[in-house]
Amino acid sequence: MSFTTTLLQWFRENGRDLPWRQTRAPYAVWLSEIILQQTRTEQGRPYWERFMRRWPTVEQLAAATEDEVLREWQGLGYYSRARNLHKAARQVVEAGSWPRTIDGLRALKGVGDYTAAAIGSIAFDLPAAVVDGNVYRVLARHFGIDTPINTTTGKREFAALAQSLLPPGEASAYNQAIMDFGAIQCTPVSPRCDVCPLSETCSAFRAGTIGTLPVKLKKLEVKERRLTYIYIRCQHQTALHRRPAGDIWQGLYEPLCLDAGGDPADLLKRLGMAGAHPTLMKKKVRHVLTHRVLLADFWYWETTTRPPLPEGYFWVDESDLDAYAVPRLVEKLLSLSRSNPEKERLIQFERTAYSSRKNGLFS
Image (cartoon, rainbow, N blue to C red; front, side, top):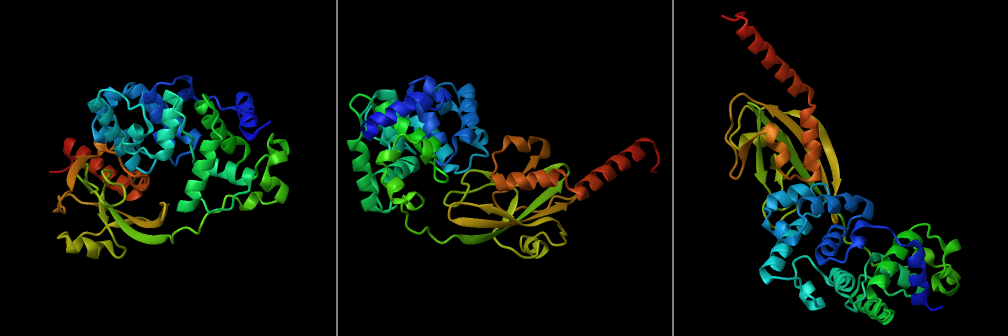
């Protein structure tokens, strides 16, 4: 049997049972593809289900605010996907219907070649082959291709090969088959070659080069970035600001953030908060992004008098913090601040003082 025929047969017997495969509605398919960009299926599935429950149609998603979408997305990372998701929903609603061509789908915010091919083939039977990490791996190994996949030449070579393997009238099944085959059978580490239906025709299996394919040029150098976070607590409120465009975590919220390391008391003094003495909660908390490693120091400062805040910051009731979408790193800070012993000691002191005043112990 040919590569394509064998793959389709394998898929009929081993394909994953995923909720978005129970429908060909473009909204459900598109939503799944955006969520699964740079996200494992088991991690993305509950987010897809949550979005479908809250916003069952593209019109409802388009009517939501960006803050609501970001809050629902919290924890998935790569937040530009959430912003693009929201903008694309509004594009569809403004156009009056879903685009039914690859070029039309690619014009949606956040939709590239792979996503356009996936949506187009699954929802509209368009003859477009998908090419993602799974596809690169399966094709490179089976056909023995050592052209680097992150070069222009490599991308063109693999795209042409993938398109040539697409069976007439079965683009949807084939695309889902090769994606599942890469996720289940031809995995990056410890592929199941002993029970692979393609092992007899697999170039890498015969040559013993499974571990070296696909070839990818060396990644960019990962740089470190230091951050100092200070959770300011004043009368059961804390200070937040929304991160601006042009940097990580655009549109998400965070407590006072100083883009540097060092003594937080000195840093606060420069901001007009002389006399502040924050307590260290945790030092050099590591958070990894695509081409950057963040090292954050977490500090806590309790004050009874509101200090002057830098431009863009505002006070928020602590009870309302869950309404604001924050990066995963800030989630860790908020969790620590809620369990901070110094905070608990001060809260207990406030309660004791209040009780004493109520019972007439203070004159």
